[in-house]
Image (cartoon, rainbow, N blue to C red; front, side, top):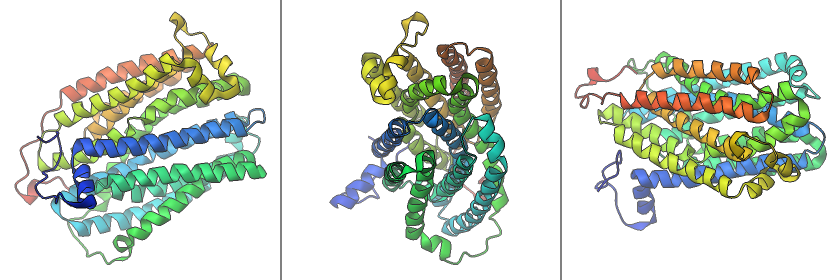
Length: 455
């Protein structure tokens, strides 16, 4: 019996290690398993990096400076995943149609666009370095310039990652994520140990992304260097415009999960921001556990939509898997709050566990619960995007504004910040589920080329 959304297995040879890996990739549960392991390990390594930096950046305000910039980095670069999302969607659909030449045309166009955008980001980072350093109480504007370089490299990395995800090469995609996270730890540790401090911590992402991007592009060099035949049916502007709603949706989701750290840093000062940032390390770890589910679900739903197949079962299967993952993590926090606080906050663990939330709820557990809700919101956003739905974006925009206004009004205590996010998140989750429940199944498969969506 096949899982929802999986491909037929009769075309896959079932002998040998390579064949077994292929079968694992083709089944939905197998793909979930591969990406869950890979993304969980990569996320754990990324959080290990943050924990490591929290112990190594000992100067007063140093870690909060790094963490506030790192939150901006996450907002911008994860928002930039809109490029990867669009690349993934088009490659998945072109693969269904067997249009390899269009894949080559798409990659060449996006490569130039991303390089140009990277240059713009570097110039903008230089222009805003001094005022942003003043707002965030940073000791040097050079931190902002380094952040811009990291964003530019990570932005270009969305291209090779989009190829791997669109072709549903989940093992390679997972290895790429693990490699970036591992190299970031190595570069960060060496640079900070060498005395570069926050500069080294920020530069680590740039160096790690550059190495992995180069390796992936080498293996796909034929797609970039080979000649692409002109195709009148290929309209790159369509793909470019498709980025707009995707960018808005992804940006809004990431914005709502990261802007709290930036606001607390601006409103509460370095000491309180350091404590909140270390509690956030534990809480926001929850966000990344179901990431593998989303990475598998998105190209599957896009391809199924292109074939005219219903996608509801894949959604509910994905929600169950993601919900189970975040539920286990939050339950662990509730059962072992002291261990969790010590692991993420180190010497500040007692301060973190001493923060009193209404109802006697542990602060770290409350943080984890809030982020679990936003993890499901993110998964639902990608489901809607795979089906080319856009109405939900306006609702998310209202939620983002409500979160900012709410935190600005209610931030006397740190639990108040989380309760604002909890109310906003729960509201968005219910609305997103309502949208998903009302989705009409796609029309029965496209039988003629003119019936296909314009690409």
